Length: 187
Ligand code: SF4
Image (cartoon, rainbow, N blue to C red; front, side, top):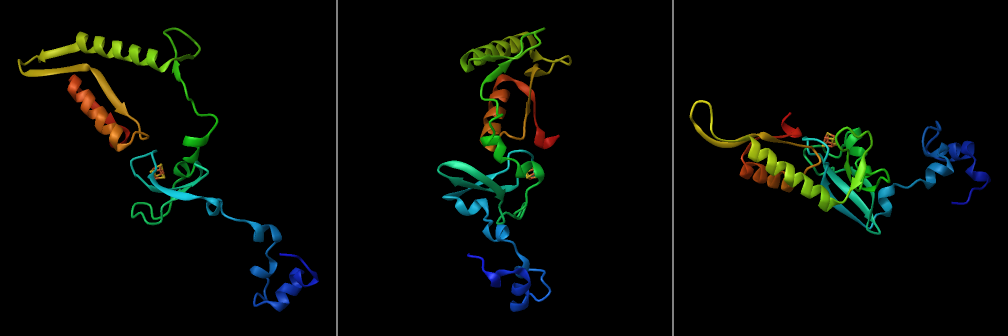
């Protein structure tokens, strides 16, 4: 909106209902021109904050197929539109240039991390899991009870794992005979 002589704050104050000059009469041009980032979004996707077990619902604002903002979902009975500081920063989880996008490996006694091909890392993990299971497998425990388990493998899931991932992890580890299967949500 073009500014004129009549736009002076004191004149706006006298001419408007805001006689005490505590509202619209003294609002700056910069404030007038501010717009929420969410207004530019093409669409909104419903999601859940991945960081902790509270499970706050999120509205993910997308423009040109890029996440431009994440806000609390006011429709959720869990958080009623709110997010804690961690959840409010969850946009960084998908957009930060500091994200690690390669597998990092620090060999025994090494002081530096190196990049590994995903396939190589998966082979190394599989070899270690099979060896740990073979080395620690128990058919029968100290009291003669049939247990068919391993105490040499444990799983501790993080909060950024979703329901589907946790379901598969539980199935996989139980099938391997592990019984020490936990998640951040229960700690
Ligand atoms: S917004 Fe905060 S409290 Fe809610 S799920 Fe995310 S980390 Fe947990």
